[in-house]
Length: 319
Image (tube, rainbow, N blue to C red; front, side, top):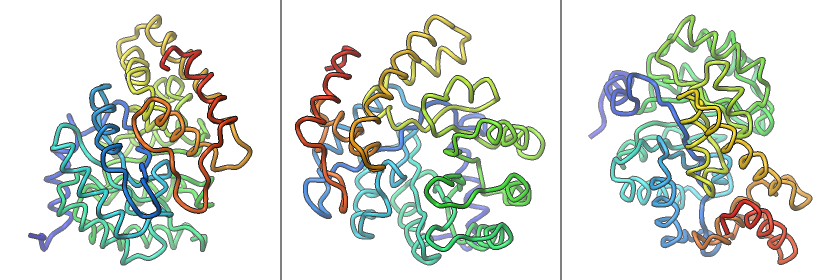
């Protein structure tokens, strides 16, 4: 049953979403395994969920960039949300990307996520038509009360072409249902300012880094962990890196980050921007986790590219 006060409900649910009012650790942005166009690879999805939970993740993020959310039908997005919350069964928090070009579709997906038992919604800037900062501020101020879940903002200017500027976030910090920011800009000066803003106005905010190889730098700046696409594959390695950082265990950290840096080579396989998603799906399929079929308009890697990815995984001793 939906509450008449979504933000009040979001405050209550945020206590379930975080420990000590902050989500910390590794939260993989899961790939979406497909059996065919608009058909979920159900068995692969279950194996992927168990793989990352067994690896020690602090949460799961579905329908993000790595999950190809904009390329999936609304029907499939809802199916994925329902399947995920059922499989996870509250073992870790489930974060659901709700970004859409249409305001009402974002709200609709968020309500489905809440009804299915998800723990938080994740919202980036609307894409296609670039919004100015005044428009973006009003957009979030208008949509947040309509979303019956704690809300994480997602800074992804490389794809949306619009930043959540720091002053905009300072204004939006007044919205209590916003529980943090994921930053995938790759700009460490921006990330530092984001952590400073958290310390200044919202100490309960979780600040997570997107670019996975920057996890040590982000931790040093005050970050709470990472939303690491590579954790779809090398889950335990990313968790070890985070644990090494928080325990000030330099040997554990260095062993893990050296593997993470080598793993980055899979993203150089292929010649299109889609190679990041295709390489991650390819690696997961080589490990027998799930199908490597991407959503349209992308194509899966052919055998020469698959062999290059396999060689990297063998070098890392995970294949």
